[in-house]
Length: 190
Image (cartoon, rainbow, N blue to C red; front, side):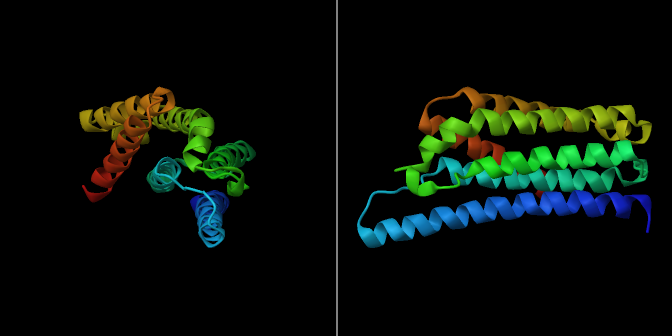
């Protein structure tokens, strides 16, 4: 087993749990929606929380992919294992907050989105900064950041995330989340 395989086992387990948390949250929200329909009660999933979930999932995939890019720069040590566990744990926390534990406590999940968006997006920005710092500290990885398109796409990502943190209008929030998702879809297709 290589160093990367050993480290990646931990990383992928924790990131996989983050993915499960996002999908489980969506499942709980759908169950509450179906129950509300059956009881003729008001409950709306809305657009904002599912769009945030899609963005977090795409962002998570980008970090999973980044681990592959960094595979040659990783060696097993206690420091690396703690850093990987902390990084993935922050991701799990962000994913955990996307959907509420008890969605039935909300008439509309858009309310939940506006309560948690700054925390979730702030956590993702911290992870992005950590990733960029690691890449810049490794000569082999720093070269991947030397292309202007890499910096341009990163600046777009940061600007949209900051906007999503502060915009209070529902329609603008939907547009910003859609742009964040579109950005990742374009990158994945290139």
